[in-house]
Amino acid sequence: MQNLLNGIPLWWYLAVSAALFCIGLYGALARKNAIALLMGVELMLNAANINLLAFWRYLAPTSSGGLAFAAFVLVIAAAEAAVGLALIIAVYRITRSIDPEKLDQMKL
Amino acid sequence: MNPDLPVLIVLGAVSVASALGLLLSRNAIYAALFLVLNFGVGAVIYLVLNAPFIAVVQVSVYAGAIMVLFLFVIMLLGAERLSPGENPPGMSFQRPLAIALGGVLLGLALYVLFVRQPPTTATALADSSPMAVGLSLFGPYLFPFEVVSILLLVAMVGAVVLTRNR
Image 1 (cartoon, each protein chain N blue to C red):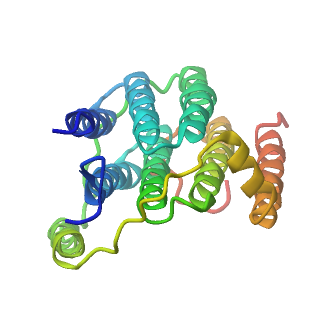
Image 2: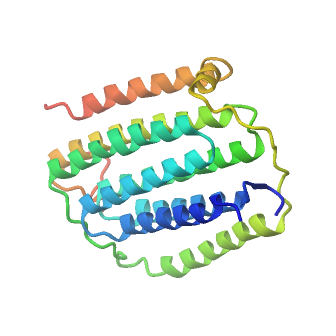
């Protein structure tokens, strides 16, 4: 592979980030606890950020667009956590449960 | 031999292992702490990628603020116990289907990583100081920056409205 940086190939970062994304996706789909589900989503956002920064560093280091978009992803993760946890608290007040399997109605 | 390579192999192993720990732990507190470890390792990977500003923001925002929020909600709701995931009845076809589709995805990823010729690497040194990030945020990325700030405002108002006591 020719794209090495300090002896590290680009695919190394992509493989780690793909593994993190898959684990996060499984967590978001399979957990029976809404908080663990949100943690899976955070893991996926983090994996996307590793991808963004690796591509920025290896392929376009002269522009700072990769850094700007990584910062945007961090902001969106913060907003998602705030709204997600607020939703979990609001649903828990009504149903006394945080099992996403039990939330199968649009109207509570 | 470059000293970065073994460091990065250890970092990747710890990162994936902490993600698996998050997935497998039966206690939500432990899962959250595994996630903190994962974010810490992610910050070190950002440092290796020459992005110190993002690494520091990652530690303070993710590992600091967001995880405190998660732990607070877990303890507030008393939701420490995580039950194991199990297949609902009537969904037995999903497992072989998921394995087949996952195999296709893995094959595609391996093909892209190892067979196709990757683009060549730019060798210029990156300027990743906070000043460069700020200049790009308020320069070429001003419009996305404004959109994200509105998103944050909406999220804040939404969180307040959703948790309001009626």
